[in-house]
Length: 176
Image (tube, rainbow, N blue to C red; front, top):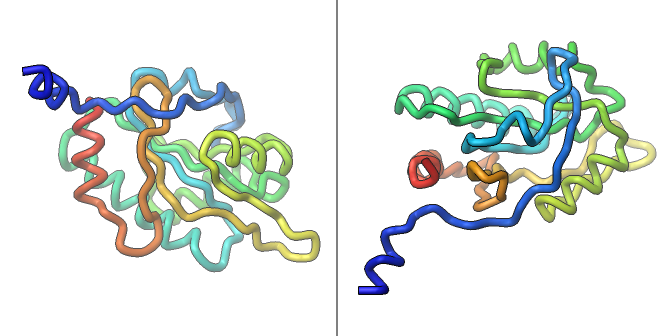
């Protein structure tokens, strides 16, 4: 009986994110409290990326469309820039438009130092972010992360190739 009761709880506990307050594509303060009570998917990208960011952002856009089609409410998307000295709010807004991002539920964040985003990614997602001294391409992870309504990182997925869209949708539903 106890096993059956335990099996009914599909909401996973995860690793709590540390509080943050950055700047979104509208040049407005945006932080962890703005996502309270929402399930969200997040990633790390930058606008001048020539390799993994375009497919990641396309895939996130497709996921956003799927979430809408499924009629899921209180689901958000957050993309953190890993090149904050280049990625201004206006630049992020233009980047988002290229991918038909619905900015009502998807926020693109900047407004911090390079050191801050490197530490933030490592501390909260165990993700490497590194901007080489003589290169305009930032090294960063390519995962999508599922964050539950309590602001805890629950799961990660490939964000570039073989993105498990159906599994992500199922996992979002399990968190609702």
